[in-house]
Image (cartoon, rainbow, N blue to C red):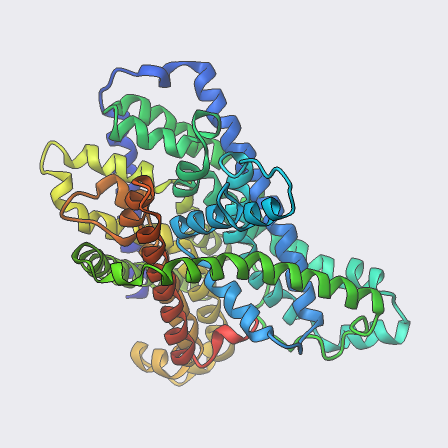
Length: 527
């Protein structure tokens, strides 16, 4: 039964993706500027540059934060910093744009401080620099959480041996910490690269024009404004091909898997926690991280409070209801797909004895990000157009595309506890002849409960903050909070936009608080 559900889930995903690509390839169009080789090469170049810079910088920043948190397990505000990192991980992209502009823009906090000091601040946030900073704000906290979980699994015996050998901090980093970071980097790095490569809202809002226009934005413009489906198809196929070629070297690493292990604790036995140089370094990193994450969040709060009365407008309330309905539906669908595929992977790995095939199944759930949401939306639009009005089906289409885009994140939370459950209790359950439901309740659910809630929370939050798919299918009848925020920013209604940004941030924070309570404090731990 579990195999059938997983195969159906994979089949539906493959059908949607292939239908979308086929619809774009077979669609007509004039071609326009998208047929010019120089234009396409420029789009690919800037897409690769911003994605590579964003992912690489996020990995370095995330590793520094994780190492500092691993060494400093007790300091005032540690839980608040981790909570801020959790919120920043799934902060809606359009809210991140608002925060970046409010802090780094011409009228932002830094500009005010520079003016007070008599310094000519200038305007630089609209361009490649602003895009990279926004991506770091979203991705570095995610990298920090992944690296912190890896560092938590280092056994105390390694630290005791290092202490007995008198290893200096540099040797500890090179021989113990660095191998863990290198082990985790390909998976999270590939995920962040794909997310930045197919980024839409941040590039659209902060790109500053054609100079930083990426493939994703060009696909949206080709379909939405020019009805150039042929040009969009060319760009979509190129986007998939470039992403696949770049990720091929790390694909085999993503299919390999070490035995699952629970975290053993952080910092207690590390011999470098008393080194003065490490104290200074960790303090500087943690202060910088708190400022980098905390100031934008504080800006959102302070900016939105002044116009909180506008939240009771009918347009805002309707957008809130639409966003919640779409977000919850997309979250449930994403978790259902991820759970079905994870069960199939477990069956292939342990019962069928096909670990390589199981790895490929797992990889297929992660590589859905190769197909960007705009490409998928455009393809489904073309396929449905001869048979129905795609805009009349806007809500279910937004749910489906958002669920698929959140699948890599939900799957990453769901698969490890399912595999760990079988490694611990699978043979015993088989020997006792447990039925599927009994096995799930007694062996799977205790380990799966918290990660499942976390996966649902992340998928819902990501869908709540989606702008790309909502902008593509959104109409007067289907307006989400991110779409409303973007329209108010475009109309220079800054105060009202600030209140919507605050509402989105509070929704994400509320989701995490509820998830933390229901998941037994999972968010407060390394994983």
